[in-house]
Image (tube, rainbow, N blue to C red):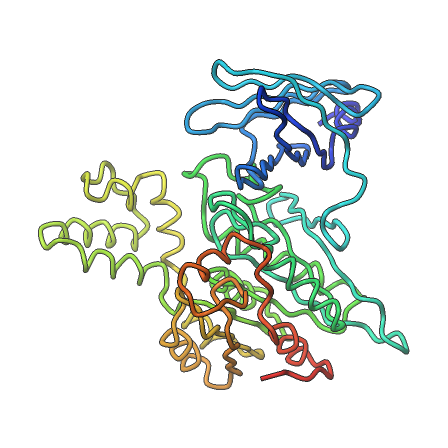
Amino acid sequence: MPALALFAQEGWIGTWNGALVLSEGTMEFSLTVGSSGALLDLPSQNLYGYPSAVLNLSSDTLQAAWLFGGGQFLLTASKDSGGASGRYGQGGASGTFTMSRLGTSRRAGSDLSFTAADGAILPGTLLVPPLASGGTKPPLLILHAALGYADRDGNSYSIAGRNDALSQLASALASLGVASYRYDKRGSGMASWLVAKESDSRFTPWVEDLSACIDFFARDGRFSSVWVLGMNDGALVAAQAALASRLESGLIIACASADSPRDAYEEAVASAPAEQQAEGQAILAALNSGRIVSSPSAFYAVAFRESLQPYLADAFKYDLETQLRAYTGSVLIIQGDRDMQATFSDFTALGNAKPDAIGAVVPLMNHVLKTVPPNVDLNNLAFSDPSFPLADGLAQLIAHTLGLDVAVPF
């Protein structure tokens, strides 16, 4: 992009807070603008981090659009003395809005991007605690979110609300002397636009990106060691990247299933009606050999849709138990005793795959690292409510594993 165009965009890039003027009052919103797209927060709708379908920037004008249920929500803004203002529209409704630039980032830490192997720029947040007495370097933990749309903080716009699990973990670790880095993987957060459509999605680029991130920090002299944590199904990426990058320090697996993507689909096909199983097995065989199946039947039209098949064919190559057997570094496997998604059977299977791993069960912790009561509804609510606290002792366990003199309260 020409330097002049980049200069014109700079006045818009960042986070803005605003209010839509409605007939019944106002609706607050937040807009985080990057060079490739913008993320929209509508707190009253419990919507966070929704990526734009269109973004056009000039020195004085911003135009962005989001697709909601097939309709288009359009914002057009111009700069003014108070910040920016303009009009919004969706369907037959329209109105005005104002917005002002947010002076400070909502995230604790420093914005830091790294370059992936294919040249893509992945944005993230580095949080470094103050140096200990004597200038001791802190260890660094790279946090990798769950798969799908989960961003650097552990939130996904496909799930109402937010949990902020990884941002809370990063802050807790910093208070104990552990540095952390978390980033928006391609297809999420401010890297949403690196995956333009579902048929472009693949599993291997996530591994290559995390490997590049590990290499990036391995060259950084500020840290005593570099570790990686993979959360939920992000553990599959973390383990493979640890192998690919020959990560020496260690790997942390948090609340992960022992089932591989292929296992999960094979189990689903095996539980299908008898008359549907032959087709399902044929599709699985094709994907296992890297072939795409055109026009699956109505029964499999969603699970094996053609736009998803390239991703599945790639993901089926990876298996967490196999990766753990091959990895020679230190491993900590963490399970929550109120995790309803990853079970103790998974925890045991992963431990059997890596007998020298340290295994730890965190009391009262669920699948997104939060302390929850023995209530299913509240356990589920913690996935979308940041007021649920990070599990007590989790950060201490990790800091202790990374070599710090920290007591673990369980």
